[in-house]
Image 1 (cartoon, one colour):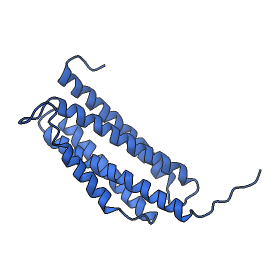
Image 2: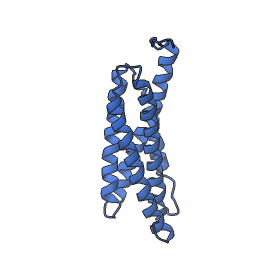
Image 3: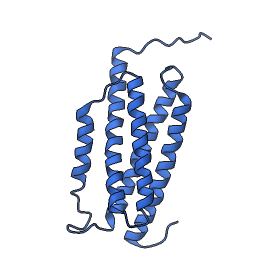
Image 4: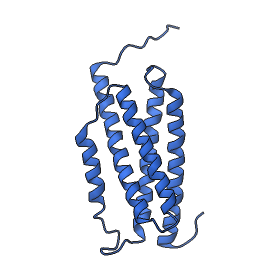
Amino acid sequence: MPIETRRPPTEQQSAALSIYLNDHLAAATGGVELARRAAAAERGSPLGAPLRALAGDLEADRRSLTELMARLGVGVTGYKVAGARLAEKIGRLKPNGGWLHRSALAPVVETEGLRLVAEHGSAAWRTLRVLAGSDARLDADELDRLVDRAAEQAAVAGRLAAESAVRAFGGTVG
């Protein structure tokens, strides 16, 4: 069986990786903004503390991504990051059933969104983990930790979404 040697990525492959990582950075940025807003809005509720912790974890993952991008020589595409921040702010305009006061539906939608953000991040870490076998700039152990943390984040957000759904719609968790 021939031994496959890894050739340096082509210009097209490097461009594709840059787009991919910047798209994930934009999603991570929007997710951090959403988590911070949700944590602030739920400050006095049982959701407040876990949302603050989730926001901190998502911010740490975003930093990990920007550090990894720097290691790979991938620049940040500013308009994508700015667009994600703007999109999150525009999303605040959705009333979720209430114009003057925060509705019971808001935390359901927000925590479901945070679960998607965590799962999106996990997908990126898993994809990069595959590449770690052929790119010395990627640390497989670090990526394994990030995959595990993203799974924990998705589980926390899922639990918070279930609790929020029960508060909004009735019933019991389970």
